[in-house]
Length: 305
Image (cartoon, rainbow, N blue to C red):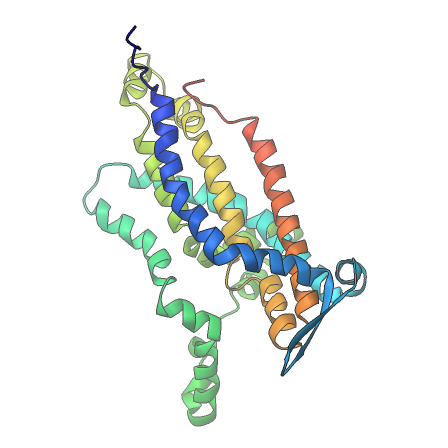
C-alpha cells in the first residue's frame, strides 16, 4: 500500500526556517565560546595566581561571590546605578522609538532620508567612533588642547552641564526633577533608539491595512485606532524591544559594571574575582529579563491565537 505524503503545516515550515538561522550561531558558540564559558565558571570559584610558567587555580568555593555581595562597595554601587538607569531609560526609549516609528510610517517627502538619519547612530557606533568613545580620545584631545591653546577655555569646548542649567532656570523645584532628568537624557535616548525604531517600523508595516479600513468605516478616531488596533498589534514588538533595550543597556560600552569587571581582571589581575562578579552580573541581568518578560507577556496580544 502506497504511503500518503504528509505535508508540513505553515508553522512547521516556519519553525524549520528559524532553526536554520539558529544553527550557525550554535556551531559558532560550541567552537569559539563553549570552553571559555566553562572556564569562566571554574575561575569564579577559584583564586587564580598567574606566573611566567602559567597559572595556578586554588578552589575557594563561594568566597568570591560573598566578597562581591558583602565586602565590595564598588560592585554594589555600580550595579544599583545601572539598574536605576535601566528603570528610567526603558520607558523613555520605548515611548520615543514608538513615537518616531509612527511618524516615519506616514507618507511624506524625504521619509527614507529621515529614517536613515535616526538609524545612523547605530551604524556609526559600530565603527571608528565606538573606539573613540571607549578610549576616551576626545577627552584626551581636549586636555591636550587646554595645555596648548587658550581657546579651549571656551564653554563650547568644555561642554555644558545641561541638567544644571535646567535646575538653575526652574529653581530646583522637586516635582520638576523627573522632567529635568528625562530632558537631560535626550541625547542618550536618541542615540540608543535606532534599532528599536527600525523594529517598530517593521511591526507597524506588518499590521493588515484591512483593520484600519474597517475602523475608518466604523467612524473610529485616530486615538481609538491607536489604542484598539495599533498598540495591541505591536505588543509583541514592544516585548522584543524591551528585551533588546535591557540587553543593550547592560552591555553598553559606558556601563560602569563592565568597566569594573575589566579593571579587576586586567589591572588588578584578579581573574577569579572578576569571573565571579561577571557571573553575578549575568545572573542578575537574566533575572531582571525574566521578570520583565513575565510581566509584559501577560499583556501581549497575538492575532493568531
